Length: 437
Ligand code: S3P
Image (cartoon, rainbow, N blue to C red; front, side):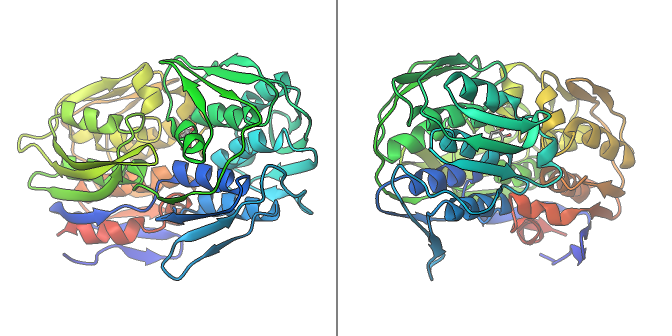
């Protein structure tokens, strides 16, 4: 295997590969890491996390909880220890900087709304454009005082005693659901959140792991306020949304053989495996284990010799695959019948307008693609050439097009490649390791 991506400042050049193979261990899940760090802060005792995500987004969360009085440190073996301060956090002396992380800003808002102090949450330019009314509205119904800046960050919160609500989320969002669970934990009465699509349930599982009791039905979750949390020690499963780039690369290249060790397989996150199987990829799952309610296992992927078929992703599937859609779109041209994506308007309000950037970058590589308000049509049976990719500073766009670049003819320059560190700092090293040339 050659070491073949060239890095210069913010750009990376990707050379085509002949196939991909090897055994990889993907760093800890970002969604779980955020939630564990926040709950550890308000738990009694010291929590210890192995394989905590090295994502810059999770560092934003750790730095915020430190400013709220919950000190953390990294141990020699790489584990992260977070000192819980119990239910009452310390008022910070400066604004809480959430960086690029929507998860940090939205979930922390839920945690802080019930505290009795004042807080200001700020973010970078991308985060400051993202919609925050979706958390302000239900939290205000609970009695919280949140002020937004024209619907966005900066957010100021004047903590207040909260009262439970029964709330149906209008847009499927695990961040909003978790923010309300964190607020509900500190409210008087029992808060119920109902959702039409079951979004990732790491908030529910993490609360249980820290000792809270929750009630769940197929489409709702309820939490009684006033429950105390206690510290835990946990190993965080590999992030399947990071693995997605390599899962898709392995599904794309005939002759591939990629094995993922200790990968998170929570059913609310593993829809990509069903889609890749439907496209014809061979996926094996072994050694399933339960870690604090989270399913973990070994996954092996081989591409079908005849290539991938094609599919339409719409409705609930689009919500469940929201972070994986960029890479599925990026491999779409090589499928036989193409990839159609609908009901994915949320992609337009992620770290970038992902629908627009996917379309522009696929076209730059020579593909035919049609853009819709809520999705894309990517016809199959196409071959792409190397090009200059504009990631728009969006980590998932940079990584998705690095995968497309492996199969393109000629070299591809990924601009803004450093953004990969937002969720997956190890991405380019691992890509070099699995790419055979
Ligand atoms: C996340 C939920 C999703 C996802 C994001 C992480 C989470 O966002 O896109 O990367 O950890 O809850 P939404 O809740 O906005 O859909």
